[in-house]
Length: 307
Image (cartoon, rainbow, N blue to C red; front, side):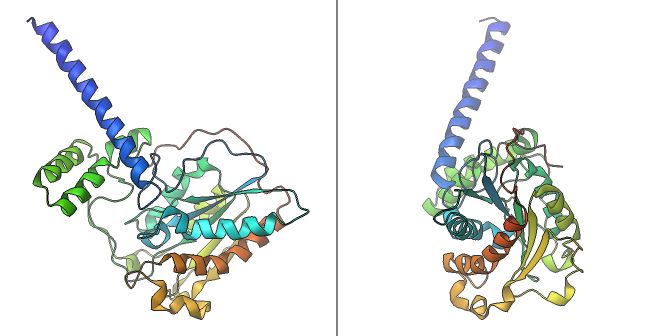
Protein backbone atom coordinates (compact mmCIF):
# COMPACT_ATOMS: atom_id res chain seq x y z
CA UNK A 1 0.00 0.00 0.00
CA UNK A 2 1.42 3.35 -1.03
CA UNK A 3 1.66 6.26 1.36
CA UNK A 4 -0.81 8.31 -0.69
CA UNK A 5 -3.38 5.51 -0.59
CA UNK A 6 -2.90 5.07 3.14
CA UNK A 7 -3.33 8.82 3.64
CA UNK A 8 -6.52 8.80 1.56
CA UNK A 9 -7.92 5.90 3.58
CA UNK A 10 -7.05 7.69 6.81
CA UNK A 11 -8.78 10.88 5.64
CA UNK A 12 -11.89 8.91 4.67
CA UNK A 13 -11.91 7.18 8.04
CA UNK A 14 -11.73 10.53 9.83
CA UNK A 15 -14.54 11.92 7.69
CA UNK A 16 -16.75 8.89 8.31
CA UNK A 17 -16.05 9.15 12.04
CA UNK A 18 -16.91 12.86 12.02
CA UNK A 19 -20.16 12.25 10.14
CA UNK A 20 -21.02 9.43 12.53
CA UNK A 21 -20.45 11.70 15.55
CA UNK A 22 -22.65 14.42 14.05
CA UNK A 23 -25.45 11.90 13.45
CA UNK A 24 -25.16 10.59 17.00
CA UNK A 25 -25.08 14.13 18.38
CA UNK A 26 -28.22 15.11 16.47
CA UNK A 27 -29.99 12.00 17.74
CA UNK A 28 -28.96 12.96 21.27
CA UNK A 29 -30.41 16.44 20.70
CA UNK A 30 -33.71 14.96 19.56
CA UNK A 31 -33.92 12.96 22.78
CA UNK A 32 -33.15 15.74 25.26
CA UNK A 33 -33.86 19.13 23.68
CA UNK A 34 -37.52 19.20 24.79
CA UNK A 35 -36.68 17.98 28.28
CA UNK A 36 -33.60 19.36 30.01
CA UNK A 37 -31.35 20.11 27.05
CA UNK A 38 -30.98 22.63 24.26
CA UNK A 39 -31.51 22.37 20.52
CA UNK A 40 -28.66 22.28 18.00
CA UNK A 41 -28.34 26.10 18.07
CA UNK A 42 -27.95 26.37 21.83
CA UNK A 43 -31.36 27.54 23.05
CA UNK A 44 -34.23 25.51 24.52
CA UNK A 45 -37.24 24.28 22.61
CA UNK A 46 -37.98 23.86 18.93
CA UNK A 47 -35.66 25.46 16.38
CA UNK A 48 -37.15 28.65 14.98
CA UNK A 49 -37.40 29.41 11.28
CA UNK A 50 -38.13 32.66 9.50
CA UNK A 51 -40.33 34.96 11.48
CA UNK A 52 -43.94 35.01 10.27
CA UNK A 53 -46.16 38.01 9.75
CA UNK A 54 -47.96 39.02 12.97
CA UNK A 55 -45.74 36.71 14.98
CA UNK A 56 -44.61 37.99 18.36
CA UNK A 57 -41.53 36.43 19.88
CA UNK A 58 -40.98 36.63 23.63
CA UNK A 59 -37.46 35.73 24.70
CA UNK A 60 -36.19 35.09 28.21
CA UNK A 61 -32.49 35.54 28.93
CA UNK A 62 -30.63 34.84 32.13
CA UNK A 63 -28.75 32.11 33.95
CA UNK A 64 -29.76 29.02 35.92
CA UNK A 65 -33.15 30.28 37.11
CA UNK A 66 -34.27 31.48 33.67
CA UNK A 67 -32.96 28.30 31.99
CA UNK A 68 -35.40 26.19 33.94
CA UNK A 69 -33.27 23.34 35.24
CA UNK A 70 -35.45 20.41 36.26
CA UNK A 71 -38.45 21.29 34.11
CA UNK A 72 -39.23 20.66 30.45
CA UNK A 73 -38.78 23.44 27.89
CA UNK A 74 -42.58 23.83 27.74
CA UNK A 75 -42.71 24.42 31.51
CA UNK A 76 -40.43 27.48 31.60
CA UNK A 77 -41.48 31.06 32.28
CA UNK A 78 -41.02 31.98 28.60
CA UNK A 79 -43.60 29.40 27.54
CA UNK A 80 -46.11 30.29 30.24
CA UNK A 81 -45.85 34.02 29.48
CA UNK A 82 -46.34 33.33 25.77
CA UNK A 83 -49.45 31.22 26.42
CA UNK A 84 -51.05 33.89 28.60
CA UNK A 85 -50.26 36.60 26.06
CA UNK A 86 -51.59 34.46 23.21
CA UNK A 87 -54.91 33.85 24.98
CA UNK A 88 -55.40 37.58 25.49
CA UNK A 89 -54.35 38.60 21.98
CA UNK A 90 -56.45 35.95 20.26
CA UNK A 91 -59.80 36.60 21.87
CA UNK A 92 -62.86 36.16 19.66
CA UNK A 93 -63.26 38.89 17.12
CA UNK A 94 -59.59 39.88 17.00
CA UNK A 95 -57.08 39.10 14.27
CA UNK A 96 -55.02 36.10 15.27
CA UNK A 97 -51.44 36.48 16.44
CA UNK A 98 -48.71 33.86 16.75
CA UNK A 99 -46.88 34.14 20.06
CA UNK A 100 -43.60 32.24 20.16
CA UNK A 101 -41.46 31.67 23.27
CA UNK A 102 -37.66 31.66 23.17
CA UNK A 103 -35.75 30.23 26.13
CA UNK A 104 -32.31 31.71 25.46
CA UNK A 105 -30.97 31.47 29.00
CA UNK A 106 -27.87 29.41 29.76
CA UNK A 107 -26.79 27.39 32.78
CA UNK A 108 -23.81 28.69 34.69
CA UNK A 109 -23.91 32.11 33.03
CA UNK A 110 -22.73 35.18 34.93
CA UNK A 111 -24.73 38.39 34.77
CA UNK A 112 -21.84 40.15 33.05
CA UNK A 113 -22.14 37.61 30.20
CA UNK A 114 -25.80 38.35 29.47
CA UNK A 115 -25.13 41.24 27.09
CA UNK A 116 -22.96 39.17 24.74
CA UNK A 117 -25.47 36.32 24.81
CA UNK A 118 -28.34 38.67 23.92
CA UNK A 119 -26.35 40.06 21.01
CA UNK A 120 -25.53 36.54 19.86
CA UNK A 121 -29.18 35.54 19.68
CA UNK A 122 -30.51 38.86 18.36
CA UNK A 123 -30.95 37.20 14.95
CA UNK A 124 -33.95 35.33 16.42
CA UNK A 125 -35.73 38.69 16.21
CA UNK A 126 -37.29 38.90 19.67
CA UNK A 127 -40.07 41.44 20.07
CA UNK A 128 -39.93 41.37 23.85
CA UNK A 129 -36.90 40.41 25.90
CA UNK A 130 -37.34 39.41 29.54
CA UNK A 131 -34.22 39.45 31.70
CA UNK A 132 -34.41 37.12 34.70
CA UNK A 133 -31.09 37.20 36.63
CA UNK A 134 -30.04 34.65 39.21
CA UNK A 135 -30.59 35.56 42.83
CA UNK A 136 -27.61 37.06 44.71
CA UNK A 137 -25.62 34.39 46.51
CA UNK A 138 -26.51 31.65 44.05
CA UNK A 139 -23.45 29.50 43.42
CA UNK A 140 -22.91 29.17 39.69
CA UNK A 141 -21.82 25.91 38.14
CA UNK A 142 -18.12 25.48 37.43
CA UNK A 143 -16.55 23.80 34.43
CA UNK A 144 -18.47 23.23 31.22
CA UNK A 145 -22.02 24.37 30.80
CA UNK A 146 -25.27 23.96 28.87
CA UNK A 147 -24.97 25.03 26.15
CA UNK A 148 -21.23 24.45 26.17
CA UNK A 149 -19.66 27.88 25.65
CA UNK A 150 -16.18 26.28 25.70
CA UNK A 151 -16.97 24.22 22.61
CA UNK A 152 -14.79 24.91 19.57
CA UNK A 153 -17.62 23.71 17.29
CA UNK A 154 -20.14 26.03 18.94
CA UNK A 155 -17.82 29.04 18.78
CA UNK A 156 -16.97 28.50 15.12
CA UNK A 157 -20.28 27.26 13.66
CA UNK A 158 -23.10 27.99 16.13
CA UNK A 159 -23.90 24.27 16.40
CA UNK A 160 -24.12 23.25 20.05
CA UNK A 161 -22.80 19.71 20.68
CA UNK A 162 -24.58 17.78 23.40
CA UNK A 163 -23.30 14.21 22.97
CA UNK A 164 -20.44 14.59 25.51
CA UNK A 165 -22.90 15.71 28.19
CA UNK A 166 -25.35 12.90 27.39
CA UNK A 167 -22.55 10.33 27.54
CA UNK A 168 -21.29 11.81 30.81
CA UNK A 169 -24.75 11.54 32.38
CA UNK A 170 -25.22 7.97 31.09
CA UNK A 171 -21.81 7.05 32.49
CA UNK A 172 -22.86 8.34 35.91
CA UNK A 173 -26.25 6.62 35.88
CA UNK A 174 -24.89 3.30 34.56
CA UNK A 175 -21.58 3.45 36.47
CA UNK A 176 -19.81 2.93 33.13
CA UNK A 177 -16.12 3.79 33.03
CA UNK A 178 -16.07 3.27 29.25
CA UNK A 179 -18.78 5.87 28.61
CA UNK A 180 -16.96 8.23 30.94
CA UNK A 181 -13.76 7.84 28.95
CA UNK A 182 -15.59 8.42 25.66
CA UNK A 183 -17.22 11.56 27.05
CA UNK A 184 -13.84 12.83 28.24
CA UNK A 185 -12.24 12.23 24.84
CA UNK A 186 -15.02 14.11 23.02
CA UNK A 187 -14.81 17.00 25.46
CA UNK A 188 -11.05 17.24 25.08
CA UNK A 189 -11.27 17.17 21.27
CA UNK A 190 -13.84 19.99 21.23
CA UNK A 191 -12.26 22.38 23.72
CA UNK A 192 -11.62 25.95 22.56
CA UNK A 193 -10.88 27.59 25.90
CA UNK A 194 -10.03 26.11 29.24
CA UNK A 195 -13.01 26.06 31.63
CA UNK A 196 -12.65 28.48 34.50
CA UNK A 197 -14.50 28.98 37.74
CA UNK A 198 -17.15 31.66 37.82
CA UNK A 199 -17.33 34.47 40.31
CA UNK A 200 -20.32 34.46 42.67
CA UNK A 201 -23.35 36.20 41.21
CA UNK A 202 -23.29 38.93 43.87
CA UNK A 203 -19.89 40.12 42.63
CA UNK A 204 -21.19 40.74 39.10
CA UNK A 205 -24.77 41.90 39.59
CA UNK A 206 -24.79 44.98 37.34
CA UNK A 207 -27.67 44.62 34.90
CA UNK A 208 -26.81 47.80 32.99
CA UNK A 209 -24.97 46.21 30.01
CA UNK A 210 -27.61 43.47 29.67
CA UNK A 211 -30.44 46.01 29.68
CA UNK A 212 -28.67 48.11 27.05
CA UNK A 213 -28.13 45.05 24.83
CA UNK A 214 -31.77 43.98 25.27
CA UNK A 215 -33.05 47.46 24.35
CA UNK A 216 -31.09 47.26 21.09
CA UNK A 217 -32.22 43.73 20.23
CA UNK A 218 -35.92 43.86 21.22
CA UNK A 219 -38.26 45.48 18.69
CA UNK A 220 -41.10 46.08 21.16
CA UNK A 221 -39.77 46.28 24.69
CA UNK A 222 -37.69 44.94 27.59
CA UNK A 223 -38.84 43.58 30.95
CA UNK A 224 -36.41 43.21 33.84
CA UNK A 225 -37.84 40.40 35.99
CA UNK A 226 -36.32 40.52 39.46
CA UNK A 227 -36.43 37.17 41.32
CA UNK A 228 -38.11 36.89 44.74
CA UNK A 229 -34.87 37.01 46.76
CA UNK A 230 -33.41 40.02 44.99
CA UNK A 231 -32.26 43.06 46.97
CA UNK A 232 -34.10 45.75 45.03
CA UNK A 233 -32.00 48.46 46.67
CA UNK A 234 -28.95 47.19 44.78
CA UNK A 235 -30.62 47.56 41.37
CA UNK A 236 -29.52 50.45 39.20
CA UNK A 237 -31.90 53.26 38.33
CA UNK A 238 -34.00 51.99 35.39
CA UNK A 239 -33.49 53.69 32.03
CA UNK A 240 -35.86 56.48 31.05
CA UNK A 241 -37.44 54.52 28.23
CA UNK A 242 -41.13 53.93 27.51
CA UNK A 243 -40.16 50.50 26.14
CA UNK A 244 -38.65 49.35 29.46
CA UNK A 245 -40.52 47.78 32.38
CA UNK A 246 -39.49 46.23 35.67
CA UNK A 247 -41.35 43.43 37.47
CA UNK A 248 -40.43 42.34 40.98
CA UNK A 249 -41.53 38.78 41.75
CA UNK A 250 -40.99 39.59 45.44
CA UNK A 251 -44.25 41.57 45.32
CA UNK A 252 -46.18 38.30 44.97
CA UNK A 253 -46.31 36.52 48.36
CA UNK A 254 -46.83 33.18 46.62
CA UNK A 255 -43.39 33.43 44.98
CA UNK A 256 -41.78 33.09 48.42
CA UNK A 257 -43.23 29.63 49.01
CA UNK A 258 -40.71 26.79 49.11
CA UNK A 259 -43.29 24.61 47.34
CA UNK A 260 -42.57 26.55 44.13
CA UNK A 261 -38.89 25.55 44.25
CA UNK A 262 -37.48 22.18 43.21
CA UNK A 263 -34.35 22.15 45.32
CA UNK A 264 -34.61 25.28 47.39
CA UNK A 265 -33.52 27.39 44.42
CA UNK A 266 -34.73 26.45 40.92
CA UNK A 267 -38.40 27.08 40.16
CA UNK A 268 -40.71 24.13 39.71
CA UNK A 269 -43.15 24.16 36.79
CA UNK A 270 -45.61 25.77 39.20
CA UNK A 271 -43.05 28.41 40.08
CA UNK A 272 -42.47 29.30 36.43
CA UNK A 273 -46.24 29.43 35.85
CA UNK A 274 -46.82 31.68 38.86
CA UNK A 275 -44.00 34.03 37.84
CA UNK A 276 -45.50 34.27 34.35
CA UNK A 277 -48.73 35.63 35.84
CA UNK A 278 -46.80 38.74 36.95
CA UNK A 279 -44.92 39.15 33.68
CA UNK A 280 -47.62 38.50 31.07
CA UNK A 281 -49.74 41.64 31.81
CA UNK A 282 -46.63 43.80 31.43
CA UNK A 283 -45.74 42.10 28.14
CA UNK A 284 -49.27 42.79 26.89
CA UNK A 285 -48.94 46.42 27.90
CA UNK A 286 -45.79 46.76 25.79
CA UNK A 287 -47.39 44.98 22.82
CA UNK A 288 -50.50 47.18 22.88
CA UNK A 289 -48.27 50.27 22.98
CA UNK A 290 -46.66 49.28 19.66
CA UNK A 291 -49.33 48.88 16.93
CA UNK A 292 -46.90 47.16 14.54
CA UNK A 293 -45.63 44.62 17.08
CA UNK A 294 -45.00 41.30 15.39
CA UNK A 295 -45.24 42.60 11.84
CA UNK A 296 -41.53 42.49 11.08
CA UNK A 297 -40.61 39.59 8.82
CA UNK A 298 -37.02 39.81 7.71
CA UNK A 299 -34.70 36.98 6.77
CA UNK A 300 -31.66 37.07 9.02
CA UNK A 301 -28.72 34.69 9.43
CA UNK A 302 -28.94 32.45 12.47
CA UNK A 303 -26.49 34.09 14.83
CA UNK A 304 -23.18 35.84 14.66
CA UNK A 305 -20.25 34.19 16.34
CA UNK A 306 -20.30 34.64 20.10
CA UNK A 307 -17.59 37.02 21.23
